Amino acid sequence: MTKHADSAALPYRRGVGIALFNDEGAVFAAERIDTPGAWQMPQGGLDKGEEPWPAALRELKEEIGTDKAERLHETDWLCYELPPELVDHVWRGKYRGQEQKWFAARFTGSDSDIDLEAHKHPEFCAWRWASLDELPDLIVPFKRPLYESIVTAFAGFAKG
Picture 1 (cartoon, rainbow, N blue to C red):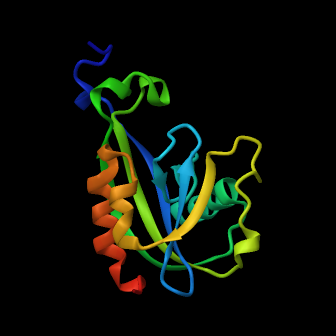
Picture 2 (cartoon, rainbow, N blue to C red; picture 1 turned 60 degrees about the horizontal axis):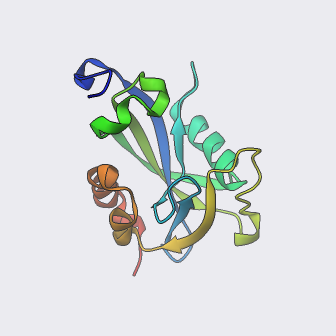
């Protein structure tokens, strides 16, 4: 049994994410260092007083080494719940999951601008351009409904 038997009493952590599309309509996906086989789009928490779009660009720069992106669209706030066995281990047990604003953005750089080791604490070990539709099958299962919502929201920016 976890320390927080009723995680519903915990708040959501506020965060942002970016579906970064290249000119061919594929989206950036990266494999997590700490969860081999789990691929995701860049995302992270909001700092105190930070607005969502600047936070999304900051996360992009920290996680993939570049913030060369043009904002296309954004979602309302979307939530996911952590599985009960993770609540006490993620974010020191202070949150039940995340409430995120997602942005669709066009990548304005080149593949050579992407550097997964740009930050002193890299989160990803590999990256690729993927079909937006395949992302829900690449993410950890508890985030799958969130990713399905993102696919629906941003389908118009994907090609092929």
